[in-house]
Length: 266
Image 1 (tube, rainbow, N blue to C red):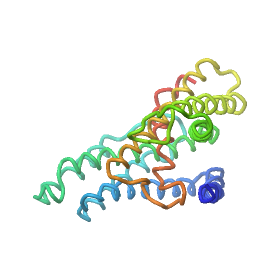
Image 2: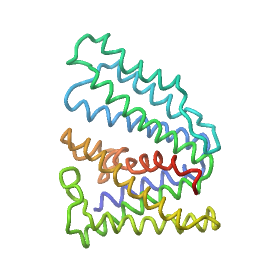
Image 3: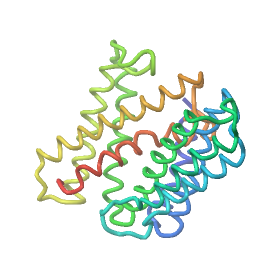
Image 4: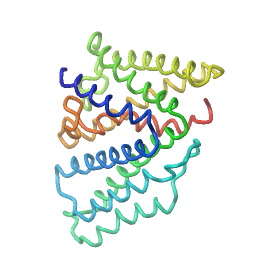
């Protein structure tokens, strides 16, 4: 617990000023975090076997392409250039013909990397674009995930009885999930109403925020399933007590992706 508290204080002391300052510093920080996240997802896969070095370099280049795509955009209009998508597919699939050895690199490895690049790249790209548009929108989304995670943890610790998904994440409980969803939603909705738009349809906002809270928890479980598959507790130990970049950003990445469907509704 002491490690977790110290880590969260250090992380907040570094990231909150960067979030407030925004601009080039924020974009660079997000790019670095995205590259570290891809490094974690590659290294956990390399628990079983090593990727060829040139494939990893192509993967890093690909995720950079996605993260910096439209990074100066300051409106909530999201798109991914087909040229970038085509580049990623070619970069990740053609190497199996070069390697000529399915033990070194095969189509399963390629699909794993394509999916990882797109999820990480799009998630961190959206962090930049939404920050360009409005810091308050980004804070609203972070409040959903942080509020849900915090109260789900406390609610599960105090009143958790029924396991939510024991084979994937044995410590998560149904009671904790419900408490986290309700309180995380209330905190985020209150912030949105006060600081973003007090003319919003509150009922719609409640439903959307609650759904995003649920999606964030599902994102956490999806990433937990990857860790369990490879027999790991965390993606890395870059933040003692909290794990790696993906361990901290898994919920917000999925929330950002889901938020795309509701941008025009709230």
